[in-house]
Length: 360
Image 1 (cartoon, rainbow, N blue to C red):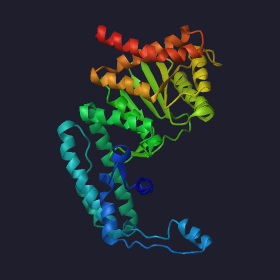
Image 2 (cartoon, helix red, strand yellow; image 1 turned 90 degrees about the vertical axis):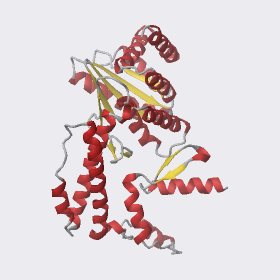
Image 3 (cartoon, rainbow, N blue to C red; image 1 turned 60 degrees about the vertical axis):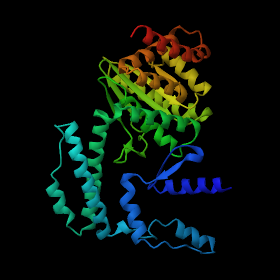
Image 4 (tube, one colour; image 1 turned 45 degrees about the vertical axis):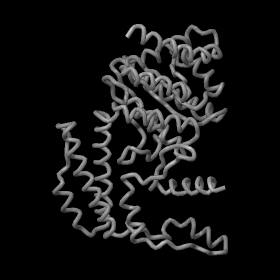
């Protein structure tokens, strides 16, 4: 059907990294994000698209697998310079807005950048392009944390993105789940720091996953006497338990050992929690092989949406969220088994909401 053709086309162009989508189902809109617009314009104006009609499969696959067989416009100094110049203009514009919000913002010397742009040295242009991207990311992230994250528009977008991920309407769901969870925690009121360990594009769209090596979690949340270690995954079934069960625990345990004066809680968010994963987290909320509990709170994406939507609607503080995490952990200590604990989490959330409204 035409819908299948459209879906296949959207998936193909998203894979290029130059396009993103918004909306859902039949109402999905394909768009070019700010960080891609110059490249797309160069492709339209300067690139000659050639259809390869090679009939020999071996020769075609050799061509298909060669990353250097097509020269793109920005592979030469002249066009790379256009990208850098446009990026510098974006940098100037955003600095003007940023200084209104954060007067102590450290700004790079633009005159030095303008001198380097005049070069025809391709390597220097590449380095300058990357440096500008890093600076844009730093400023955009700071503005998001200080201002934009607390707006109704941003919070609505966060909720909508979670709903898209949960319903399967987001092709980059795994990447977006990390980014959106980070954004959702930043968007909560209160004095807290949310450190991300994954990479972002300069416009705060996903770039790559957290490395997952050296006991590095997806993100870390620091709040006075508490540290939260949120971990997210779209894995399901036994695969979830095999891949996430041990890594999540190792990440949380490393923070427990490192920050002995803090209360550390892991939070695991996924579309569904496998029975073995639930059982393991239940046991470790109570005790572990190291002689102390390693608390990890499992939440489905639907449950997490319910929680943060309530927090946003009532402008609640990060400590109110921590209170809920503590309540779920305490229930694990009093529940007779993991089945009862799992079934009680929904009720704990609703009781917590009622208490917050009754005792504001």
